[in-house]
Structures are given as C-alpha cells and as structure tokens.
Image (cartoon, rainbow, N blue to C red):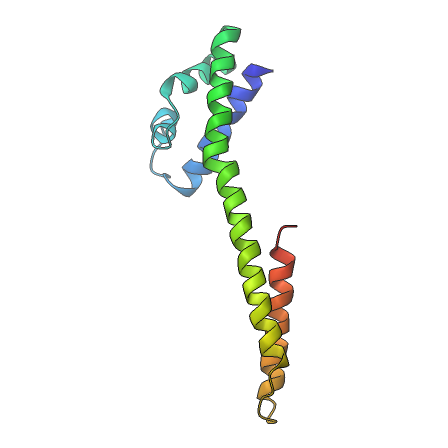
Length: 130
C-alpha cells in the first residue's frame, strides 16, 4: 500500500506540474525537483514500478514526506482559497444586495443592472464552499 501511495504521489505531482508549469522538461526528477520533491522519492517510485520493492521503512519515510508536501502545497492553499472565496462571496453578496435594492433611472438600465447583480450573486453562491 505504501508503494502505491509513493507511486501515486510522484505521478500525480509530475502530471499536474509537467502539464501546467514545465512542459519543456521531460525528466521527472528535474520537474519534481523544481517543486521541492527530493530525487530519492522519485527513485523509490522507480523501484516500486520497475524494480524490487523498497524497504517498508524507506516507503514510510517517503509517504510521510508526501503527506507533508501535500499538506503544505495543496491542502492548506486550498483551505486558504476556499476562505478567500467565501469572504469575497460575502462582500460581493452585500454589494449585490445593496446594488439590487438601489433605485435607478427608469430607462431599463436599472433592470439590467439588477439582473446582472442577481446573476453575479447566484454565481458566487454556487462557487462558495459551505
């Protein structure tokens, strides 16, 4: 199970960063090295997939590193992003509520603005994490 976790971690980080950040690089150690993943973890993954299964101790060390890396580089930034979305949604929701209740000229423009404000509020609500 640890071998599968190490393999999945390395492949997942490589796939995401290779496609989005460093498409010119082919070497997995180079790509992951740019994102703070040590080469020994890539070597462990290589052994898991193509060679003899590494020791349980080395696999546990690699999984501990992988969990910490994911916590620092994925989960915590996601939590922060979700908080920012929630805060932005609340602020924009207050503005939209104010804007949609405001009295505008009776030339059709106020109806367009009110509709746009309500659509914005609906989109923000759909994106907010509860």
